[in-house]
Image (cartoon, rainbow, N blue to C red; front, top):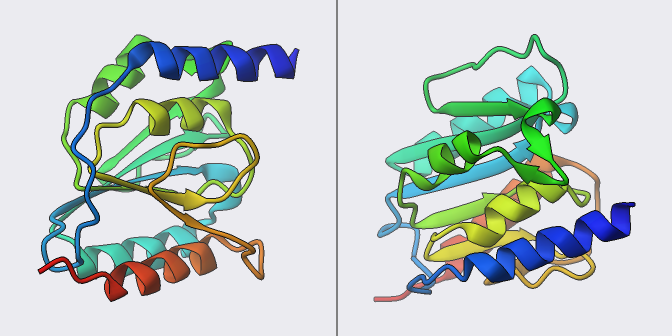
Length: 171
């Protein structure tokens, strides 16, 4: 069943055929960032650290979170959370998709450590100018990938991405 869902999501991403202007923004010119992650891998303390790192570097930060528990609170106004009940065959509901596409982002950061079909779909249809994520099998979604992460830590993944993104100078 999972193989069929994966093929369905890949087909849905190709079908969306999102036109976007690709570029590697340097950290000084990137204004807005969208971060995708699953709540089961990010504790409240880790989220606070993530938010602190990103708010320090970008003017606008928003989070799209696939939550595991019903009772997960939306910590800040910049957090949009959805649950598995809002997902059909790996594709998030139209209201989740509309909310996700409502803002234009300079940078998309996917902090999923393992394949998550709903977040893969959102990353695939994103119009962000630059998409970043951890290298995964059969993913061809990112402009910038991190390989061979030494630990299974979301915060380490973000720190590595930010370290390499800071090295990019486009002007």
